[in-house]
Amino acid sequence: MRKVLVGGFAVVIGIACFASPAWAGRPTFDSSPTSGPAGTVIHANGTQCSDVAGQGVTVVLGQDDEATIATVNGTTVAGGNWSVDLTVPLGTKTGAYEVHAYCSADEDEFTYNTNDFTVTAAPATTTTTSTTTTVAAQAVTTTTTVPPVAPAAAPVVAQPTMTG
Image (cartoon, rainbow, N blue to C red; front, side, top):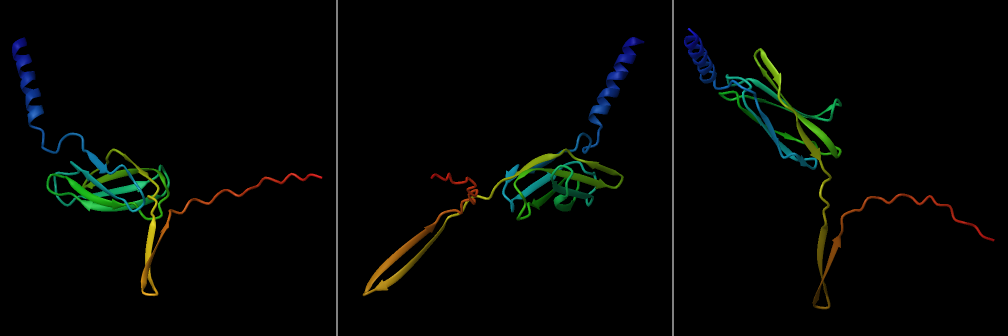
């Protein structure tokens, strides 16, 4: 009798492991890159939102519990997978942000894991201009390079020492 129970339990476990639907398990969500300046396009993709195509997905860029910075909506393809691109708006302040993804598939609404994104400062740019001037049948070329603009210096607040 004990052999029959152990054998029956093993069969039930085997069926449960191999008879699960293809979309069963923990849904996953990835986004990349993990950092960049304002204007960066974040590619987000996920799995197992639903086993039906056309279900809704929302991806949000935000900072803690503060206002949403950017949102994009998408839909699933057959098998519940999805993929969207979210652009970090120009003018977004540097700092740590979070990328959230939400699946709204019929009655199976859930939130995916949260991914981090850091908005970095835009790279400094250098402007080079070149002009050619002809003077007395000779060409003279002047090149001017303008370095990146440095941040404004703090005002001097020290008081002069008076002697005398």
